[in-house]
Length: 148
Image (cartoon, rainbow, N blue to C red; front, side, top):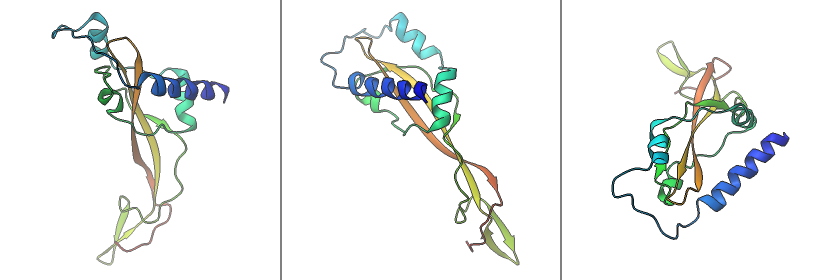
C-alpha cells in the first residue's frame, strides 16, 4: 500500500507539474532528438510497481491531455493490464445474452477494468503520463434474466 501511495503521489506530481502550461516550445525543425526517437519507437512495459498499483485501482482515462498540454513526444501505448477488482454481476448488461423461446434475455456479466499508458515529454524534458481505460467482460452467466 505504501508503494501505491508513492506511485499515486508521483503520478499526481507529474500531472500537476508536468502537464501545466508550457512557457515556450523548442523547435526541432522536423528532426526529432535522440530522446524523441527513442520514445516514439518503444512501447513502455509496466514494471512490478506499476502493475501492483494498477491491481489496487484503475487510473482514470486522460488520453491526449498531456499531448494537448504541449507534451508532443510520446512512447507507444503499453499493453493493457488488469486494474482494480472485478465488478459485481451486472444483470442488465447486453454483452451477455441468451435466446429463450425466441426472445433475448441478459445472462449477467462480470467486467474487469484494464489500463494502458504512455509517457510523453515536452521540449524541456518534463514528463507526463496518459492512461487509457477499458472495461472488458470477464465472464457471463452470473445472473441476468432481463429481456432485451
